[in-house]
Length: 453
Image (cartoon, rainbow, N blue to C red; front, side, top):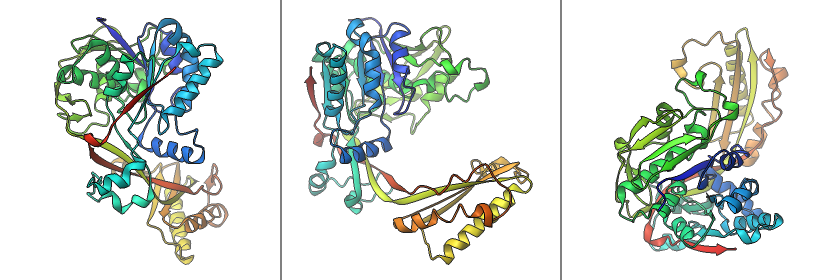
């Protein structure tokens, strides 16, 4: 058994720094590279892509990332774990295999493909079997929006990833796994943590949570003392150095920018945090109130004392459904009296929409630069040097939304004075994809691991 296992984060979301995976494998010794691509809205985007082209539906950036790290995987034994499979893990694996073959490394990759999280084709059967998949926020049954559902994926845990590693995979591709499982799985595999090793499993979850958002825990998007964080242009992505007892150190490669400190790690720990006593995952419930952080040298934070307890018998399901259309347009008004001009433009636009008989589920106005973010907490902003009027509508009638898009640009000449910058032309009509969180019994979700060579 290894006494230290190093897992490095190379992507925090689909759209992250394309060069980060290569820098992580070349910047210093690591055992595993973890790449996290999926947010809730990403699944619906990928499902739309798959509808248009059955060979799509995965995070295509991953293929380029694999191409950049192939020498480390085939030459140094670095293993890669990613949820880049989205709604089509087999197609993602095929694309990676093709890239490897192009570089003469086809026989050196063993890809574990994890499926079973996608419940879209099973929804009607599940509902008939009594699984209401009620909205966790409103309590409404899924049947109320069933005809508009675009994607439905259960959050799976670390077990199938561990299974793929045990079968010899040096690349594991999943669909909608939990972000934390991508880091916890290799630790569980290497250290042999059992299904009831609650404290160690919880430590793996905490390690995964800390590095799941990439450089957000190593100086990026950091509020604490942000002016002093060095060389963000060369920010170092994080990695964990874990031990069999569940303790680990968060750090980054030398000669990189950013900072790993107790404050930066703390900020990431409270990211997306609900009840700190019960951070629920499919594998374990971690108690974040037990976590102890301590400096362990320059750009090193030691994490210890984590406690865990058994998980629930449910899995969270991320469901996306079509919910009408929206369009958002902007105009920028200059000083003097920038806010008053923007407010008049808002009134004029609303009156014109009323005269046209256009009605929407929601009309939103924001005066950016005059307290749109913080409201009254922003203080007196009436003398703002410029104000951006951001005007948006949403509703079920696409034609009505399209008609709105032709009403904002004319304000440049027939509205209040001092429009500056650019109007951006006519706003684009976009389909709204809404989020429906639900729970389902673990027993109805069966994952599967297939090996591709």
